[in-house]
Image (cartoon, rainbow, N blue to C red):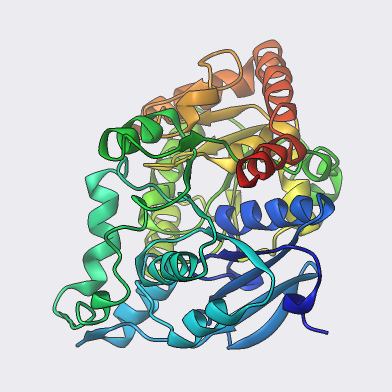
Amino acid sequence: MTVENSNLPLIIHIPRRYTKDEWGGTESVILHIILKQNKFGYKSVIYTSDLLSKPGQDYIYNIPVKRFHGFYPRWGLSKKSKQQLNFRGGNYFSLSLFFSLLFAKNLKAIHLHTGGFMGAMGRLVAKIRRIPYVISIHGGYLALPQQQLQQLVAPLKGSFNWGKILEILFSTKYIYRDANAIICLSGKEQEEILKRYPKNNVICLPNGVNFDLFSKGCGYAFREKYKIPSESKIILCVAGFYEQKNQLKIVEAFHLLHQEKVSCYLVMIGVIYDQTYLDSIISKIKEYDLTDSVRIIPNLKYQDLDLVNAYTAADVFVFSSLYETFGIVIMEAWAAHTPVVCGKIGGIIDYGQDNKNLCFADISSPDSIAKKTKKILEDPDFSRQLADAGKLTAQQYSWDNIVKKINNLYQ
């Protein structure tokens, strides 16, 4: 018996892609929403593209994932451009996804986690079948800074968009306007969306954190495995390797700390989205002669013990992203009782309090990052105060609380 034949009401979640090998914050959010939803009497599955994977049915943490083949409706895309689009922001089209949605049995609601053609297909199916749909905004929409927007569209330069023909049926213009609800992650984005769609039900609902998992790491095990001296303080950054995450500034700040003879070790963990950007980081590390004091750990799987243990081992977590709708890694660091330095950006403003549960730094300034980090490393009382307050904040963002609100929204 297939998932769709179950007597339980079916909710189909549609992200642009979903693969265990290229895991990020959006994947974590969808995973925990579904795990909790299933306990509340729903049957939730994922319909997505075959980007960075293969078409067909898969299971990720026992959740059914159906992947459908498609294409980018543009002429003149280079292989490199397609690869960049696969990782971030590509507007993928899949007719087989549309028909599978159209005929899925017991379908009660659609939860979109993407716009573009895949979002338009979800909208059209919801209209045809007269069922509700909601859309969650994970990567920014109206509040996305222009610089980040330009990075997303850069791979399209020099190509011709023939996908406008497809928009006759699969119009992307009304995805947000027609949604029964729009879920965003920050107060600023909620304000911006309400300005454009004042009649919509726009809800600011933050992400949650797997508190039980990230509060039980073993720092000693991490130091032993990666041979990090016990006397060296660990500065940790967990973020995908691409320009928006801005890790180069952390390397430059780390260089300043070494010049000031601060005994510390830099650990950077993340999925490689842009090899060229990672190469520039490695080049800068070599230029500063920091190779022996830096550990880069790429492409760890979600819930990998090394990731969990790294948060606990860290003496400070530094996050230099230029923009974040929420910043779930900050919650993970807090769950591990690790103090945080980050930029005053995006959704972080909604829950971060400077010098109370974290330290805000100017993430465009290596000197600012270094000073804030140094203060935490050299002031145990201040470090403990930040970590205690951060852990209390993380406890408020349990997935049980978040998903209960989502389920109330469905009802």
